[in-house]
Image (spheres, one colour):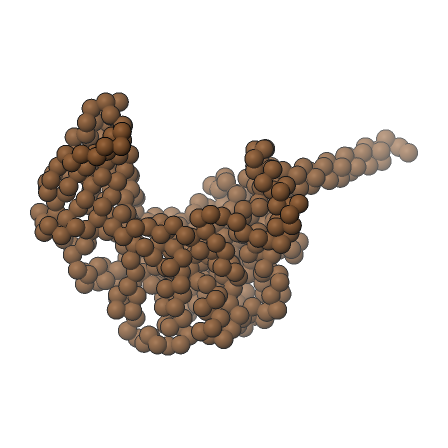
Length: 437
């Protein structure tokens, strides 16, 4: 055998053996037992049919529970949101589902955190993408998906079973836990175990840690929604979703799931994003339903309906799924009366309210600056009670003060709790840690 033939054969054999070894290593060290995305994608392939599909990122998995939707519309509903899912991942999952099922309707959630993700040329981290790509069965869809999410310099990492962001671990505790689940059969039975959350079936995750009413706080200023950063990559992929639905006679509906007013008001420019989505969808012949603009007589949400500032808790998922169904399916909510014309209009009609507090330590760590996230209430009507807890003992340092700059005890470490009031009526009760060393 000539040298010209032997060398390519050796390279091919080495490549095959190396790839098989990577598969073995990946199988041993993969850390995906606790991923609800793994269970979601398994269930996706187990359906007799999917009639109505909800697409997007984590808002979707924390938004619609099929246990209510199935009863209200008499169809088989399925949510396909995974953590930090990109629009490319949404398109890939939808393509896979369309190959398997006769889908009647698709709801696409337009989360601004997804719309403003970096462009393909600027992307570096791919953990959310690999969570999706591993479970796409169609090789053509998987290949096109992986080559669409980045520039070619990342392709080797994309296609090798091992690599950065590939859900692998060397932590003995995690490996032992996964091995135990394999031996018990829970891994192959797709049992979801998490003391803080439960899997509700067909793509819905229920968080069991609701926020207590009046306790939203942040320790940094949130920047505005970067509407100017919505890329052509995102727009073009949405257009691909539109084309896919038209080609398969699927009704496509664009919507946004409600977040807390604390989250949106802190951003400061939600109407700018709303107008962008409205213009973008209408230019393509679609309506846009933004439930952040829903009237409170139809959609009254409390802090306890959320487990953070933009994802529902268990009770929020059940409450909002019913609202969603009453609007789109049972028509108990009149279509022409559900929404305000803008987010600003919704806020203007609210009662005076403080949504939460931004509590930032000063650069010298000697004091705390308070910024109330509020609607139209005047600062002059707001006061604060401030408590400091050190070594388990809490003491009050300010009573009904209008001052938003609080000097903290020197050389101490503990918790500061701030209670806000409007005209003496309590609004929020927030706390954060501090260290003045």
